[in-house]
Amino acid sequence: MKSVFPRICFCLLCAILFARAVVAGEETRPLAIPVWVNGELAVLDENAKFLIPFENDFGNVIAGDFQDVFWLNINDAWSLVSRKDGVIVSDFSENMGRLLPGVFWFGQNGKYGVVDARGNVLHPARHEDLYTSQHGEYLFYREKDKYGILYPPQQENRETKRKTMTPAHYDDIDSDAWARDHGGLVLAQRGKDSWVIDLNARTEQKVPYAKFSGVLRDGHIVVMTEARQDKQGRETAPERYGLADAQGKLVVQLKYAWLGEPSEGHIAFRAKKDGPCGYLDFSGKEVLKAQYVSCRAFGKKGALVSQEGSDIKGKYGLIDFAGNWIVPPKYDYAYDSDVFPSGFLPGISFVAVESSAFFSPVGLFDTNRGEEVVPPQHLRLHILNEKLLSFVPANAPVTTIWLLGTPTQESAAGIMDWSGKVLIEPRDFNLFTLDASGKAIRATSNGIFKGGLQAIYDLEGKELARFGAAGPGDGQTWQTARIDPEAGLILIDQHTSDEENGERQVLRAAYTLTGKPLFRIETVECGAEVLEDGKGKILWPQDVTPYCDS
Image 1 (cartoon, rainbow, N blue to C red):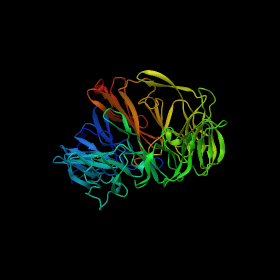
Image 2 (image 1 turned 135 degrees about the horizontal axis):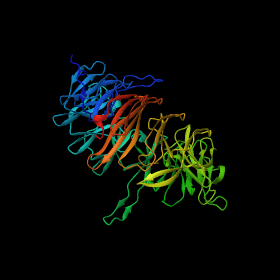
Image 3 (image 1 turned 45 degrees about the horizontal axis):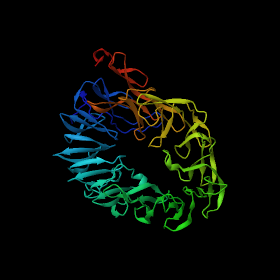
Image 4 (image 1 turned 30 degrees about the vertical axis):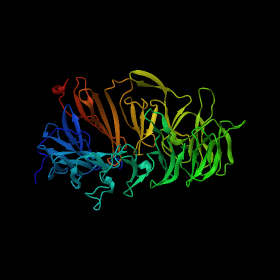
């Protein structure tokens, strides 16, 4: 069998795709990581050793979530190559690209199909176009300007292979929403009708609502119609809310001006937009009449509500399922945790007590236990998970956010556990978020804006990687991090954007999930780039002179 490794060159079009690795301590499984330095490409292994050195003549390389093979472009055609010895396993296609980790599109005769990392054809090349949903949960395809869904890659098996989940008969699919938040339900449009596609049950059904409002909780999800207007733009029918079960079937009619979050068999409602609120059960029966100014989600002990009255006007307390006060009204504000970027943690609400016209310290109340769990004493709180909180104390130091070159002062945030033990002191960063993997914490000094100083921490508060830089930046160059638990890697990418070339993304550094640096690419004084291993040893080029000012 022919080996490609003696031929030593390629040009990389897809710069950051890699083979599977899993970290156990500092041990990793084999990796194949493409890198781009001074316009030259190479492939490194898990120890930053060259699998394919720089200065070669291959056309492209794509590695995915696999261990011992990768795709290599040889003479304008794609071949599956053994990582171990460079043997060509199979020749495949002239056109190819990555859809999802370990899942690729390929083209033949103007049509597109799907293949996995080992060359198994999941769907033959018969579709006009292929797409991934916004969050990579499923694939969908286009035929004659209509859309259909392929099976989610994790559901592919002998039964589903080469088949589609739905015909291409939809005018639009809401591919931007998280299907996981809706229990695997996806909304689609056929003409004027709305349909729900259940990715788990593999079913389709026409529904009387147009949108999901919120996420699936306690086996139910709030749904809504859209407001209607006449030709002059005047509203002829307001939006209305109802409740659907986990299969998308409507169980509470679309007749309410507002519905809260379903929890513990109850859901708050308003019959009129500015009217009082009460509670329904999941059959639509009114169990607590509309008598409150504001209603929050029920926990196992009760719900936080506010009610008019000479002594309690506007303040929140805890009622039980019969409407009796358990905790008398004493909070000025209360919010279900889902209204913050933290997402929803069942039974947890933010509460605040107004101490001045400019400051209302925030705490947390657990409606499952019926008690305050974090006293209202913080400037800001952000729930990461059931164990960790991001917090901004009242006396926090100040950091600077740069927006379009203009500095803005912002209080620094830190990380603590729910007992109040501080894991990361408020100092360099003003925003912490839990990574989508749930395995790490992201920190940034520039708030929700791109760029700035950033870091990755583990869940114990240990810093694993720090990248980017504080300051205004130029708006055209910034860095981001990708965390892949299965690959066992933290990958630092550099983005550049200009009118001529658009946005480009290039790998600049890699770390293990324990924070061990594998390699980094640095720019030296003359403008050339150098590839260094995790200890700072230069791997390439040894002489930077030919690459200065290139």
